Every structure is written in C-alpha cells, then in structure tokens.
Image 1 (tube, rainbow, N blue to C red):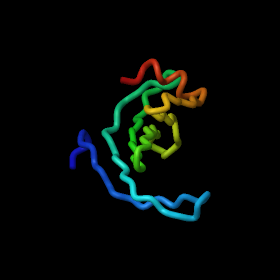
Image 2: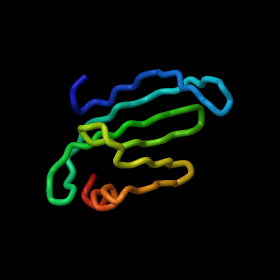
Image 3: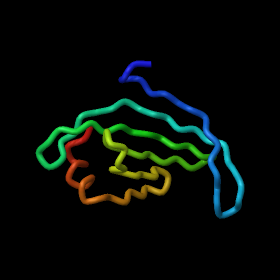
Image 4: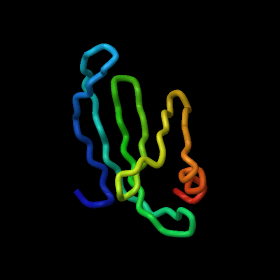
Length: 90
C-alpha cells in the first residue's frame, strides 16, 4: 500500500485487569506534515478498535505519542506539544 493509504491489521489485546484477551484492529493511516514549535514534522494517525471502543492515536516519526482521542467519550488528554500542534494539523 502507498503512503496515502490506510492499512488495517487484526490484533489480540491483553486486558491485564481481567487476565483475558479481546480481538481488535489497528489501522495505520497516512502520515501528514505538521508544524511544531516552528519546525515541520511528520505525524501518523493510528486507530485502535476494541469491541465498541475506538481510540485515535497520533505519533511522530520517532514513535513518540502526540495525541490520544476517544471519540465516543469525547476525551482528549493533550500534551503541551500537541496543544501547540493541534491548531495547525489538518
């Protein structure tokens, strides 16, 4: 698949609290350019689907987590870096 395409991968996730597993899917989306503190960086979106729970994760090229968003709960804890980047990312 090309850089602009999303790739979905089935995964089994371990749930430590119940010592069990759940089937899910991780989708790797396209990388996009963003500006953080005056420099251009690539960030990539990953979507994790576990049963009825959906989470969106954004990471930079080094794999550092930049954003976590849970659309159903409308929860988005922000790092200080992401807060500055958020307004410039489309």
